[in-house]
Amino acid sequence: MAVHHHPQRHPAFRFRSLRRTGTAPASADGTTAAATAAATAGPYVFAGLRVLTGFVFLWAFLDKTFGFGYATPSGKGWLDGGSPTEGFLSHVAVGPMESTFHDWAGAAWADSLFMLGLLGIGLALLTGIGLRLAAAAGTLMMALMWVAEWPPAKHLSDGSASMSTNPFADYHLVYAVVLVALAAAGAGATWGLGKAWARLPFVSRHRWLL
Image 1 (cartoon, rainbow, N blue to C red):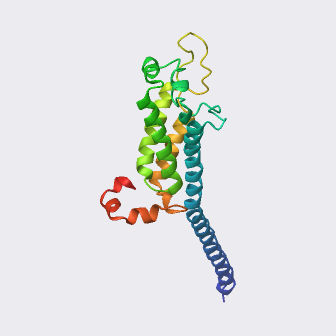
Image 2: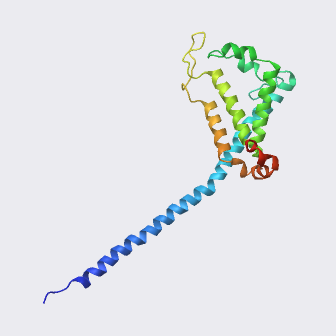
Image 3: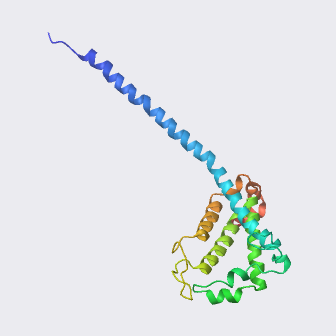
């Protein structure tokens, strides 16, 4: 009679099968937990980024308006008769719009639009409403400031070194991408008035106001 070894093989087979199936749920649970944590933390990360970016724009408006002594010297604020654009635009020394920016420097309409943009973008980001408009206005502002500094140039118009550290990506581009990302992510819903704003009838009819 032949000796059957099936009873001896079955336990080992079952043990290996149970071991494989036992690790699968643990791995799946870990992946699910990580995804849940990321989904939970994501809105707060975007909200924090929104508030910080909003403060950057709002502080720029306040400092240029009142002359707190940071970027704008005391007594040189907008309310003191100073120009928020003259110092920057009059010193543009490179790029295809160099002469145009010189013409704009200190113009009342340029000062007003620039300051209105800083205030509007800052308030929109801090409150979490109108993020799409803020992204559009902020991207336009950053694009113009990028052209004013013209990172691709290695030398200024007078031949001196431009000191550009990157031919394309600078902080203006980073700010523009952040603004677009915040609007796309609906970052105003967390720590902001975005949800209440979205429920307003006229906002519901005009989604570009979100």
